[in-house]
Image 1 (cartoon, rainbow, N blue to C red):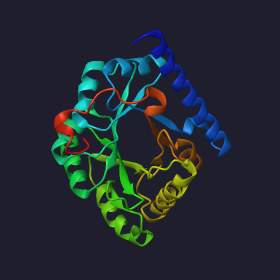
Image 2: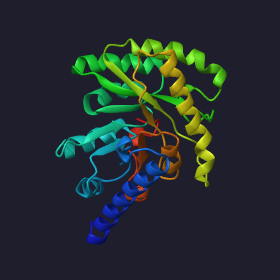
Image 3: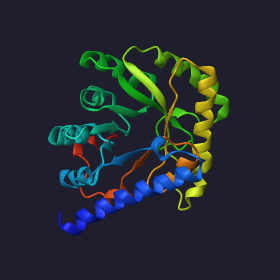
Image 4: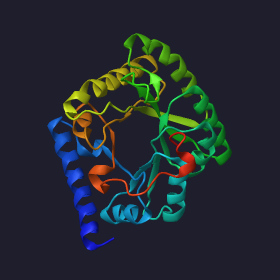
Length: 253
């Protein structure tokens, strides 16, 4: 990559950090409460390396095998942290447990059981977020959380997951629908926060501190609504440059 490309990623990264800081201050929050996860899906290693040189240490991947290959190539120099943020096919659960440090997209009891089993085999407790579908869109994964009347039923599944010995539930994740106007995403983020607050009261044995919500187009609104993790790729790295691994096209991760 040429020097202009390097400067662009560095400048974009620093600009996003500054915008996170401004958004947090406007919401009466400390910027240190918000973790930036740089989404590297579809980007070649040289682009990820430029992000590392710009100062990024936390990266998110949507596809298990693509992420594992990058982790293997880049290692964990500089204490890099790798988050799985995409839908996980059951047959890829072992790969995720072996390579990733954090999972944002635990979306079913079946997947929870598999992650728990493979985490035990790898000898670690795997931090996870429970993915909630707040919009009802068929294209999105996650627990059916768009209807508030269904929230009590969610608690049954969530309570079972809290009992799994090798998973550490840290909070919730969602994806808002795409809007040209970021403000339109606010109700979805607000409802995830409301659900989290209810879980704090109803399942006090869990750790519900984290809210992973907000991407390149709407992360400022997400921060205002309480996001503790924002997943940003395009605003920092630009458009994706390579196709996703062919055999992963049948599903995310």
